[in-house]
Each structure stands twice: as C-alpha cells, then as structure tokens.
Length: 71
Image (cartoon, rainbow, N blue to C red; front, side, top):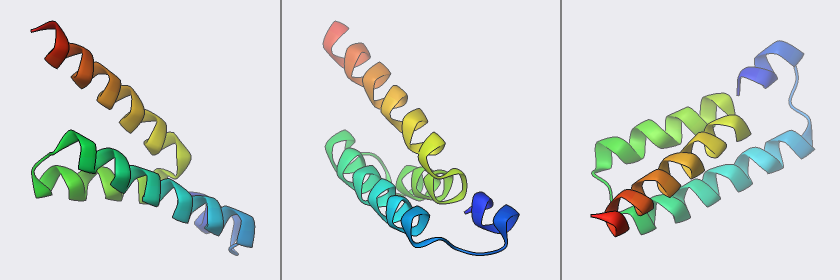
C-alpha cells in the first residue's frame, strides 16, 4: 500500500501481488490459530508493507512452530 502512495498510481501487477500476499497471510494465520486481534494486526501489516510484512509473518510462524515443537 505504501508503494502505491509513493508511485501515485496502482500498477495491476503490484495490486495482484498484494492480493496474493493477503491470501497467503490468511492461509498462514488459519494454521497458527491466533486471536482475531492478531489476525487484524498481521493483515494490516501485510496490507501496508506488502510483501515485506508477509515475510515477517513467515518468520514469526517459523519461530512459533519451533517454539511449540520444542516445548
């Protein structure tokens, strides 16, 4: 979303990748079984920062899975 504000217009390819990142975020969050407030936080982060936010979510999911399996 921020890149759209910087560019001043919305290229279709970036809009498509944003939709894909939001879809993948929803799939990942379903597996993590988080509270709805965390869902909103992660979706907004991905919406605002695009793919970088999604990469942070993937890192968090990996950390959380390792923490749950290690305990």
